Length: 586
Image (cartoon, rainbow, N blue to C red; front, side, top):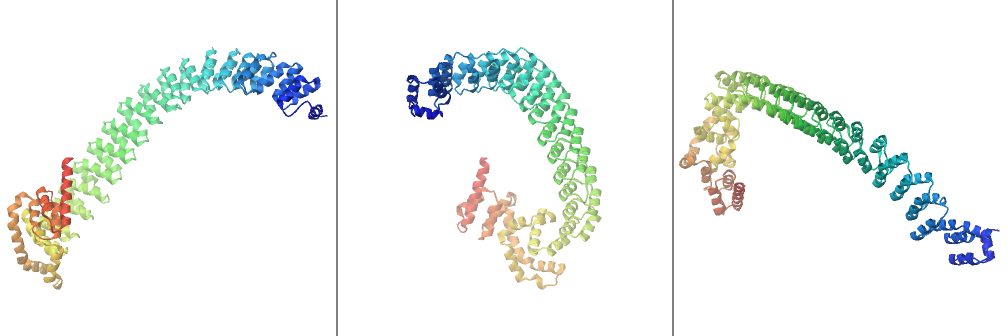
């Protein structure tokens, strides 16, 4: 007959735990039935009562210790158990930490105590277990495995073997334990291993603080798993050989810069720079080097233009600059080098017709030796280069050749002017511009002011705006003149064009004479006064150009105050005044 059948049969138990306990305590149950209840009832209170009834109080208390949610009851039960061996398993399995703590303090089983010392979830209980076992091997194992500082500290305090302390310092899972263990160590070989292996800077500080051997410190600086430890180790190194090794390795910027700050020997700095791969780091090295030979070597072995530019800034020897120029392909860098070279022999030797135009222009602009310039001119197919050269040379034969044969009319015009042949120069202009008459009149005026053909061509808008605006010689005005005196109806020869211009010169000269009368009064006071004349013309474009080209506050104030015909011009003048005021304030 089953257990529940028998209970139901007896009728002495109900679904109520309290009633079942009362039945156990009051009913006349046989031993077999009490044992059956103690082992199988689903309520620990009933099981405990059954154990108590049959005289097995320790098991009854054990049920309470395991299951009572009230810690005081559980603790009291643990203390009432007489058979301490029953607490061995309890010490390992009980969920109530307070009760487990009391149990561990009572047990004598060393195997259980060791297991508790290593595996219990509560560090206080682990410490109690450790304190009850006098086993240095256990202390070592606990100090290595335990993540709680108090347990590690307790274990360490009971260890006498230096080898065990070394092992703990190298392997403990608790950084505070490693820290205390490291403080106990004087052996530099072990301290070196700790400083390299440990990722915690506090442990690294203690280890490095105990090391004086610079070779060991260098090894730490190169290999430590803690970046800060590498820097701290480097800070204690002064031997140049080791500093060079650290700086070249450059595994970490902070560490490398610390080493670099201590190095002044330029041979060492050069060697470091040649092997450095980070631009910022190499730049810091270059700042410390002044020997141009060493700088040149770095520059010739670098493929970074920023580094090369910094080196060019520090080199003044023109032969070395020449080497850098030849070694490089970057046009910006070559231009920078060319700007620093003054020796015309060097400059000429660097000229190459296949070079970038911007570089060639700088070289030619710095060369004044006419023999060199003429040699360059022979092979130059670049108009801007030829123009620079023509402006510089004085050789009559060469200028005649250019005036006759150059394919660019502006260059021919400049050559004619330099030969004193103004008429052919003007002829070139007239044949090659849509504003023929405008150029003719403008140049007639400006040649008295020693304005050359080259400047005239490059600055025609300026000349047109400043000189001719007061007479409304805008493009539309000349289009009207062309309608009146159509050039296109004539035979297309330069002689006819020039003749026609001369015939019309009288018409233009009236206005030019009027202009010269006015300009002579103010010529000594500059362009702003000339522009002032333009304001007398009731023409929007005239007034706009005045505002754009002048910085004279008197003129701008007049426009801002009195300009009523063109409101936009008035606003432009006001804005220009504000802009000038801002600049003055700055």
